[in-house]
Length: 509
Image (cartoon, rainbow, N blue to C red; front, side, top):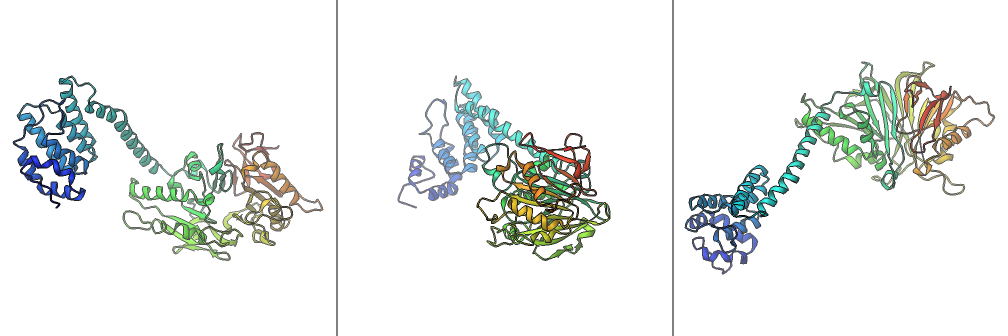
């Protein structure tokens, strides 16, 4: 210790405390607190709360304790001061107030509130109507307690939401593709209006008839839209991520956070596991989350790496067909991932157990984000339903887009993929510059992707632009009409874009 006179038995030396270094001062009080309290037994507490406490030895030590985060020591000191004040019939205003502060700073708000009320009673006795105890009570009553009540209410609501029954069958139904998607890429980040990203929700039955919910590329706002549909974390079983960009993955962390809370707080104490299928960039981006376990140490996440050319038929020893009712064929996408700095993005063909009208096994193609390369459409030649991401329109004369299909890339891909077979193409990932023009762009692509000789049949091939409310029934590729909620074959659906913000799907009779 420095050459500064300090004696725990001599209160006259305590004024030197603030001359000591912080760590030395704290150590001195902790070491000598019992002696200090013994010394203070002979010191008379405050008689009048209007007098300055700065020269009172009780407060000299008390202030140092409060300023140096020695809250339990401050509480012990002011406990003793309150006891001494009662013996001497002195005011409890200041010792109760400062003990309240010590308790408040330990997070013991109810105890602090009781101390502030005690201090206020003595303040009023001395005609102090706007003392610090009054202000503290107002703060606690008007701000702190209502805020804590709101937090508790939100926690109770969260637990209720986490334990809500599985509603996938009721809200969406089986064998449905729902686009939970509006605009592409970073649009939701810089838009001045109501702008939503999203992804897709696929519901499929396994051979046992169990309905499974699969999120595909859940980007900006996906989970908010998902919840607006009346669904919760218990309705999701798997996530498919074609690449690592935020507009395809932004909701993943929130979903996994809710998964952890569900496993910690569900009433049945059961452990839910979500299967994640992702590209190399996805693996690098989320590798820290993929080892998550529940409170019992069980895995919460199974991850399967998707590499172009692979066929995924099992995950963690379970057959994909038996568990989900589909298998995955992984395709090459020409789109650079952020975490690999390589074109490690993927496209997919989802081979389901569903039979189409001709008895063929239904296959769903998903291009993901990709530029057009000659022959890429042939990777999806067996798909009867194809989701393709347009991105934007070509910006330079005679050049395809470098990272997205664009309009010409979409046309060429469809010409390669269709091969004169029936095909419903869902056009997605619009840049917001397409607002008010999505239906027109889709119609242009549909017309130019037809055989040039003109012997095309509209019933066999359609390009439908997607919005957040598009639903396709997979068994017959019918689309839900917006106004009636009745499903009609895609050839009977017209797209109404009279309101540029929201597409409506109408039966054309």
